Image (cartoon, rainbow over all chains, first blue to last red):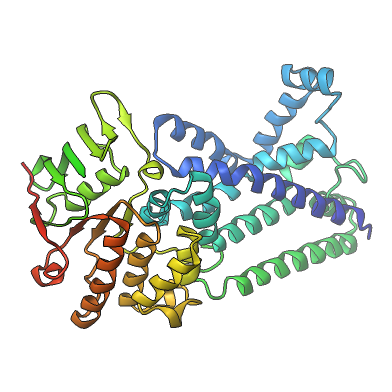
Amino acid sequence: MEWTPIWLSLKLAAITTLILLIIGIPLAYWLSRRSSLFKVIIEAILTMPLVLPPSVLGFYLLLSFSPNSALGSWLLHYFNLSLVFSFEGLVVASVIYSLPFMISPVKSALIHLPASLAEASYTMGKSRMTTFYRVLLPNIKSSLWTATVLTFAHTLGEFGVVLMIGGKLEGITKVASIAIYDAVDNNQYKEANQYSLVLFAITFVIVILVFIFNRNSARGPLE
Amino acid sequence: MITVKINKKIKTYKGNSQLIVNAVFPPGSVTKIYGPSGAGKTTFLKIIAGLITPEQGMIKSTEDFWLDTDTNINWKPQQRRVGFVFQDFALFPNMTVIEHLKYATDDQELINRLLVIGKMESFTGHRPRHLSGGQQQRLAILRALALKPALLLMDEAFSALDDELRESLVTGIKILLKEFGTTTIIVSHHVQETASFANRELKIELE
């Protein structure tokens, strides 16, 4: 068994989760505040990857990233960046694909915090930013963990989108889930089983860690 | 001196009503606000704090206009910086007693005085979930006082305290309020609760 696909999967999941922590949390905060039709539309767009078949999403991303498209040719021309059949492309696709898994638990947790927490902080002269980092975020810690784990695990198990955008280039885009498919396709069941067992073990350890971390929380870690 | 003239639409089970208040609160006074449930007492406090904006109104604190809907002046809660004791205490579950007070002020001497007044010296490392209802309410009051506010707004702030504890707390609070020159507005349902604290009354009713 080659370890490169496992390593690629872990690298992809880690980078995607990190990016989504940076952009997903402020986005969830923005969405959790007063609702408007504009926000409803944005949220619907951001939630689409949750319900769209991954191959559909992958197909449209493939078209968008292709050098023949406006976006693809712009990226190639100005940044010398081709997102099709590259690791960078997988990262961008994974960020889009896993976005709802980061946003949804964080937004839900922020909405359920009593409004008086932020109000108390504001009356004490604290800015929105200070209130967010010192009061709101620390009080949704278990939901943050849930969002992080869901995002990581979801990216780790990605298949359809990754196959569409990246194909199965050895050491570049052939992640573990594709290696499993490839092995089965070539009748190498032993190898497929080894990859599957490793993915199973990694995911199981992550979920166990979250349960241990959140054991004192009133809610279960995946609620 | 706090001058308040406000007009705010409020939805009730009977339909739409108007919260109309015209009042002046002299410096250093303690005014008890009373009125039927749902009359808008909490809304009134939140309007003064800048957490709710009325359709029409003016709030003036000494020389500063905090709100004037005619000239589009509307200071943020951060600028008004009132002490606010929330009905649900609004304590931060992630912070200990001492962290709550440090979040409000850097003045360690004041923090020590507040802990003594609130009889909370033994609980400085406790988070809200490990405090009783009365201790939580005391902490909410101490946190508001830690700001040395010019205006203190208290929403049912003594409801979880027994008579003896409340009276000893009121004695300590009064000394601080006098020292800070704080004007206080307290919403309360019970006559007994504010008998030794408030020196003025204002009834709020919907129109």
